[in-house]
Amino acid sequence: MDGERQWIEQLKRGDEAALAWLMERYGNDVVRTASLLLKDRHLAEDVSQETFLTAFRKADQYRGDGSLKGWLLRIAINLCRSRMRRASWQRLFLRERMDLVQDADDWPESSGSEEPGSANWLNKMTLREEIGRLPMLYREVIVLYYFHEMQITEIADVLQESEGTVKSKLHRARKKLKQQLEEGGWEYESSWGG
Amino acid sequence: MNQAGEDKKLQEQLREEMDPVKFSEEMQADVLRRAHAKSLSWWNREIRIPAPVAAAVLLLLIAIPLYGWQQAHSMQANMAADTLGKGAEQEERIIVSTAGVFYASQLEGEDR
Image 1: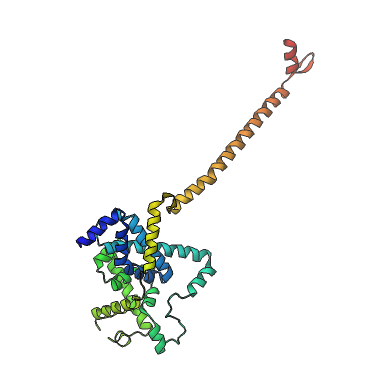
Image 2 (image 1 turned 135 degrees about the vertical axis):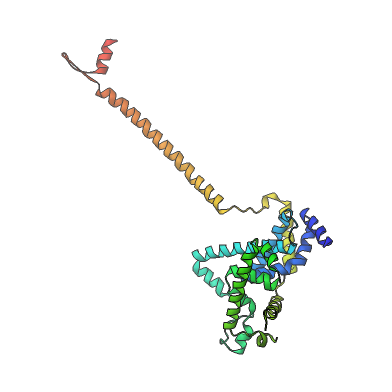
């Protein structure tokens, strides 16, 4: 932890070695979070790079009252929200173009050509796709809860919301995800060998 | 399966699915290059202008020439009206006397 504090101090002084350390340590967490939220790997890579640049430029705004990972995730989530808003506007004005972009599935293993209900279809159904079908509001809490294994207080800190709000959002999100998984024919024990 | 067990399975499954997604060395190098470029040149800096500010500036850019044009136009109209008014006044001043009907300017000329 003391080592981390030293790196943070260096980051605040604009040391690029500290930026390299930050990316080495939290890069995967940030890019995976953005991938889950945006459902587009290229956009997620772009957002995650932007996250580290923002963190480097605004390192002095990190007060140290929460975890460094939480602060980075907050930046990443805000950037994802901004991209989603921009995409909504673009979709409104350039409907046809956006439809084409959405049709080009970014994840190589999800072809969507399988017969629904078949063994292959079930195997190709992925949890991240089901999370991607949730509204953004629910997707954020689900990603922080399941992927980052965060507690309610930590999620509330990252999202800058009250614990009560997070608790109710998480409750509804989990219910909806479970419903989706069950409708898709997922069985916790049989599908995942549990 | 209980809630905790379900959660554990979901967490494991999600971690497994996301494992191939990585923040590559190329991406790291690109971030470092961009960070370095930004710290060197201030003129190469990206700026973000919030939408309300951009809208206000745009509105001002449109409003200022419009206001100026309106002012110039009304000033011109006033000047024209003044000139016309004076001319009309002078033309309309007709003096009727027993000797006849005269323009005021004619009589003024004789007075001097």
